[in-house]
Length: 233
Image (tube, rainbow, N blue to C red; front, side):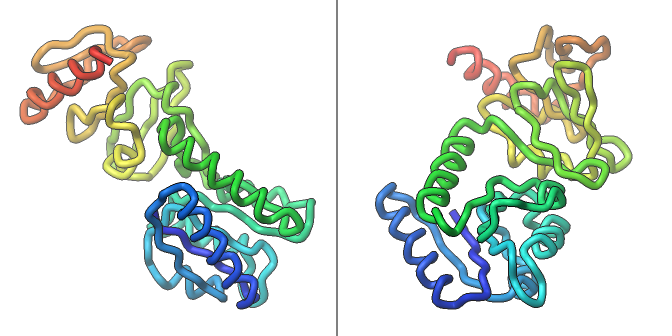
């Protein structure tokens, strides 16, 4: 796991790094922690992180603006945790799909709880975040029926028949999904095993939708094995 921490107070940054490694040792985790004192350096690093911990109030470029720019790069799906001295946070902070706000006055308890919850979420693979209409949306993977990509637009079809459109590539979304529950059956389609109602060698149907989803010939054998393994569980 790769973690970035960014705070303009160097002494605090060193303490924070030490505490995170202490947490990793206590939980037998393998992780790397990178330090940044300026948000722009973190942005320019072009390194993909699993978790990014940002001081909300920083000079030069604050945590919110840093997060906005990170969301437009390879850290589109990173877990962002803000550290703050103040209990009240601007509603704009939610536009970058903030995972958690942690008060510095109760830092270690708050941060450790956030890391615990993140690990639980990743272990279950129960949610993904995508950017749609300028805002980030968290989606429960249990609600995803299938996903299709057409003309550079990726459409996520939900069990309530809502459709979420995003420019995030299909391949990137597939990486963030639990592969025990989802399969890419075609270059343009991902399906959830739980909603399959009919299948054969070349197509399948899913709950709530009338049209057939094609199954690419090159994926047929792998799909059959993966679906069989899903049914056994």
